[in-house]
Image 1 (spheres, rainbow, N blue to C red):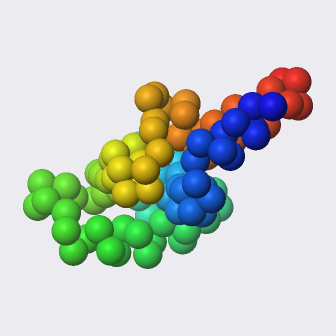
Image 2 (cartoon, helix red, strand yellow):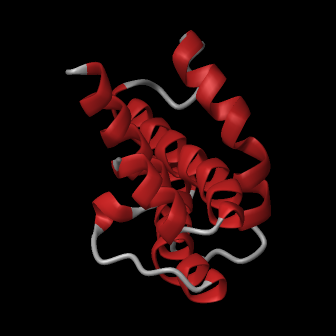
Image 3 (cartoon, one colour):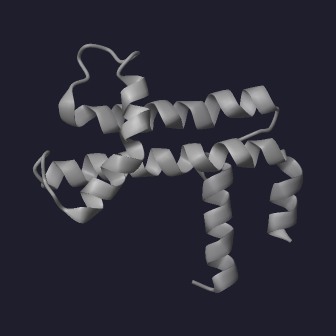
Length: 119
């Protein structure tokens, strides 16, 4: 019943836009955390995969980032920009309400899937 409620309160275009932005936000945060414990030029497979997924976003953000954001902080800045986009801008443009972090479409979908699986 929860999934039906979620689908009726968030427009389908909200899901279509939020899910890719959410995945990029979480992978940017993961890249920042991996770079905190690994060398920046590490050949570790998880870091290379995440870096390859986030490279277009980071290249785009290079055009509009403050000068103080350098090197290892770029993934954290990207995650912050995507969070602001997902939490403030998308709900305002698409006219749906988000009261807390757990009501964002991707996170709510994952929480409900976890509950459905009984985890």
